[in-house]
Image 1 (spheres, rainbow, N blue to C red):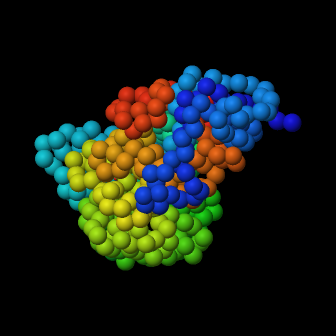
Image 2 (tube, rainbow, N blue to C red):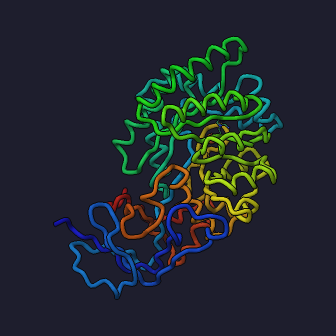
Image 3 (cartoon, protein in one colour):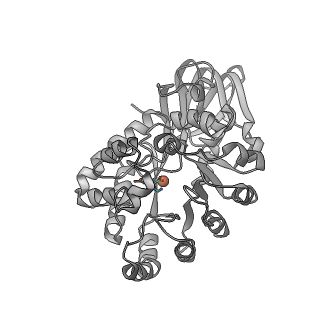
Length: 406
Ligand code: NIG
Ligand code: FE
């Protein structure tokens, strides 16, 4: 018989209500149990409820110190494998040079591609390891990591191999995604490159055990037509889709991704009523990235309107060197309240159950019998201190599959 661990002395056990994706104003519904306990066996929650109602035996008792407990945070959008830095971009933006003009001039993402492809694999692994440790300490127990700084198939697969190697070394679940970030700048090379991406890259991506393909649809990135070819080819290989859409311009990328039944459309800062209505009418998750709003000093995605329209909304850090050097899902949650207009309860659901939905995962994001035992013990007895606290460490202890991480 496997051992049973009982977490006791939980001031509040807080979890999104319902099952699966939480939509629209249902995102506000939380189940809150006072003076609770959680029974864990084999990395899963086997029981939870009021402490006095637990009648079984326990092999180990863990004291939560009369603090609140919430599900582990799910970060559905990062670019955590990169080489070099973007400190010069950061400085020049502070003197008025925009992110878009740096990109259009061949810098920005293209600079990070040059630095990443020049880094040796061990250095990339070490740097990403440190980033993942920081993210986990701030409460992320499942982290999606995109490629996208490779540009050639060989280098994109190398980035994805770094994610897979790291996944075997860290307690958090790491989910690799192939990102088509930018096409070649030369118009002729671009046509050949697209052919290779559709016919050669997609089967190789499938064979590399990567579940999803993402594409950046924007004026200086892929057009809607090109993205359509990529997403169609991905679906034909049985891969799931995601897309970076409406970051600066609403070009039709959101509608395209939804037509391919994308798991998520991410960014949405420039989404208008038509895009918001399309997301709300679909099962595609709208992912808000408030770190970008803060770092690039741009308009925030209208999370309030998305939720009021009935969309499924999640939040991510978008951790990357150029648009969002944010390592903390706790802070992303806090920013989603201030910048995107979410209520604290909606923000908790966005960072847990709905983040899991954005990754196609149904075994986490809630603390219920049968779910993975991924949970956080907060420093406070009131869960609202998590979205309330700015930038400090509101997370005291992180448990992944029932085991406390250090
Ligand atoms: O999600 N917008 C495109 N890609 C990333 C930024 C990557 C970078 O600037 O290095 C994003 O914002
Ligand atoms: Fe991104």
